[in-house]
Image (cartoon, rainbow, N blue to C red; front, side, top):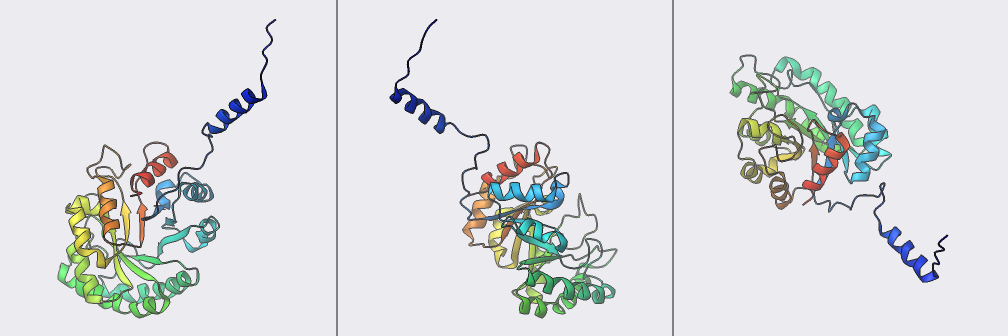
Amino acid sequence: MILTVMTRRTVFQLAGAAAALPSLSAQPAPLKGRLKQSAARWCYSKIGLDDLAREAARIGLKGIDLIDYKEWPTVQKYGLVPAMTPGAGGIADGFNRKENHDKLVREMEENIPRAAAAKVPNVITFSGNRRGQADAEGLDNCTIGLNRVKKLAEDKGVTVCVELLNSKIDHHDYQCDHTAWGVELIKRVDSPRVKLLYDIYHMQIMEGDIIRTIRQNIQYIAHFHTGGVPGRHELDGTQELQWRAVAEAIVGTGFTGYFAHEFVPTRDPITSLEEAAKLCDV
């Protein structure tokens, strides 16, 4: 039999070494937070919202996008903000048709005050599909409709965000499918509380030139969405864009809104979300 004698010093040395080992449940290193990062709920539909919110808070995200008002308390209890929530209309049926305006205005009159009361910063809306309509007419109609809700948004301190979407792959016939059209709309409405949701995935498909476009038009943008091209998957080496460069460009403009990940994970969802958050933490 071999007896091993350990001095008190040896015990302390071993204990110190063990303490230095990383814990499997250790918190990740804190994010710099120069971008307030969020995550779109629908991309993680297989994960319970409570679990998603808890993991998002652990990673260092600041919000969850695209959740209904009934779900707000679930994310708020983790210190997260419902960063983008329903405002009015849908992708196919939006402000580009005058016959939609009364309904959309009623929805905004319900959702904007509710958002303000809960300190929710943004509500989403859409142009709608063309259905043969000229872009000039759609622009005129969207301007008329948004002018009806801008004062309410200004009074309540909530930003109405018109989303830019691609009409090439995902949303055929959608009208607000180029930055120039969206920017012209925001210029016409001329309100600090009506701006664009610039979806980087969609605009990379439609026009590219992402960094220069963002820099030139940042005053018209209130919110960002991510997603890798092609496929709307992870922000990794299989995608076209240099996401760190995009994030650095946005931070460089002085942008203070939310930057939300809206990609569909192909691997472990939380791992992919954490990798994206670290990649874009510049």
